[in-house]
Image (cartoon, rainbow, N blue to C red; front, side):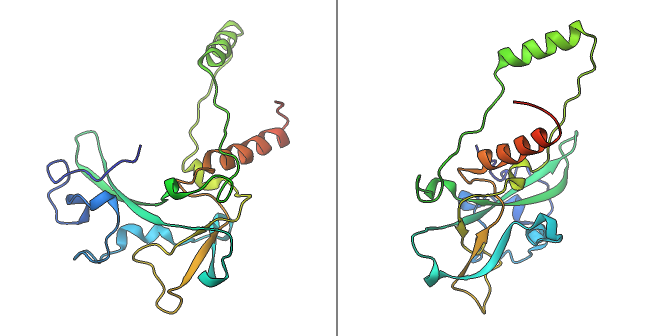
Length: 197
């Protein structure tokens, strides 16, 4: 489920794009909103976080479809429901992907509740300390095996290369194969760290 932009009643009273419900949560360049300060994180500041390579001419992409992207806007609130941060996330319109063309595998294993209960019971029996962690933006760290091309995001279309697309190196939210790509990276790390399947 995609988090939609809250309506004006739920948002802060200051005037910004987050106070208005956007049609299908798309960033609409034709609206009066032109302040891209909330989407500045779209750029890749560090080489190790490289998510795509650019400058792929559209006419040279043969046998692959170009997947659209869209912006999802969300307000982050504190305990008293005051907006503390406006967030923008670039996502892929994954429902347009075709199995066998844009992706092969989507499966990623998930722990069954029985396995979790057994693990916790064993840890309690042995008096182990159990730690829990959350990997922020986990799906953005999955390395893609397939060639995946996405269109230039609205608001960031190059005037010089308007008919070029991006080739993804790592997954983005919304890709059908994002869970599998993250699972492969995590699994490889755990095995290299001495864990076994």
